[in-house]
Image (cartoon, rainbow, N blue to C red; front, side):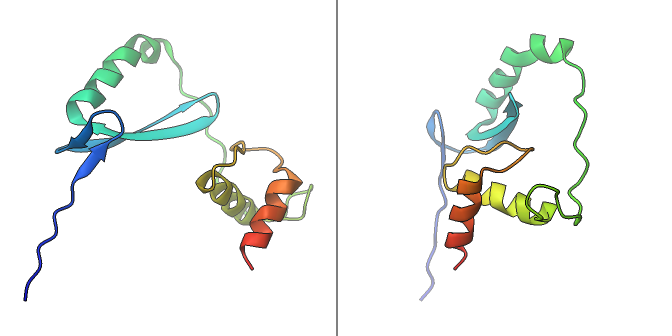
Length: 112
């Protein structure tokens, strides 16, 4: 017997939507995203247009290397894994800079 499954995407603002996209943006070093209809995505961009017009490109941080950091002896790859884990579990951690020891301990405990 065959089964059919229908995937229905629910936008974060409008509820169920057909054609949609995920909009990503960064404000104050915090990366965010939301799912929204194509029309609402265009509206979002129009609202930001005057700010985008006067903005300049930001310097992009270099890609992580495998060199241990001075602070904890962790590699950049491990630090990125810790940050990603923290974001996925609702903890606020900056994109760069030291990771609080409490977050590292929680991450390590979760890996057991």
